[in-house]
Image (cartoon, rainbow over all chains, first blue to last red):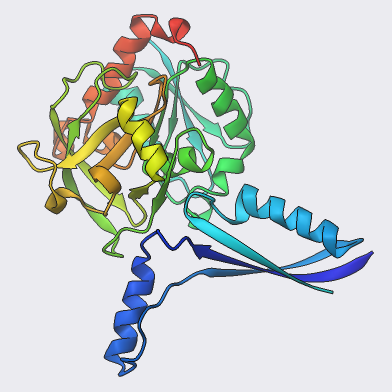
Length: 83
Length: 239
């Protein structure tokens, strides 16, 4: 058994409007960061997992993402695994 | 008299309002059901109330949708039992997959708490039989994440199957962008399952079931399901 550090990035799909990102964008412009063309806000979920292999971790975390960590109607996810 | 069950999650806060509307205004039997229970056999109708179940952590309704009681709600619904989810209850129903789509952050980013108008689009559901298509109800909303969203494919299916039950409108029943409080696609305020026995809606009928509260339009929704149960449709309807 090894311990893995897993980072799950959950993002709104590009087709879904992100009012929070829009609001961040306009606040950045107000601060003088006018070069910012777009901003979208997502989530980072960090997990520590004990498992035999990275492959098994990936399968299990994919399942977690489909069942709970993301909503496939509006979100995409990316999983990064470190030993 | 029928027996209603109001599901209580940690963070539910419209449970007592729903109980009051059903028990004291409608004169029906009503009981709270803790989300860790699994037996719904004694009930004729299930209400999933509003609130902030599990503090809205991760996504609104996401954690509550995995509570033990939700398997029983799904079975109850698949046997044709009427289920009403209001506000957070609607969010829980979509996360549980009992209704399509999802409720996302209001387009204004603001928590919207005010009276709105909704137009009845489908009066053939378990909860709208005493209303007429085109009727306008004045009803309160109170939510930060009430913007209904679904894929184009799902939206097409919803429209084709008449699953859109309520749309935000102006006082005359015109569906306009100005009357949409949260950015919902198609001004959608409530949808039902294909069979019409599961209804999810963002507005709060339990908060407008007595004139002392400023309006009694919500009572029509509870009266409808009582009539529906009286007609014995519960046993006839299929999953």
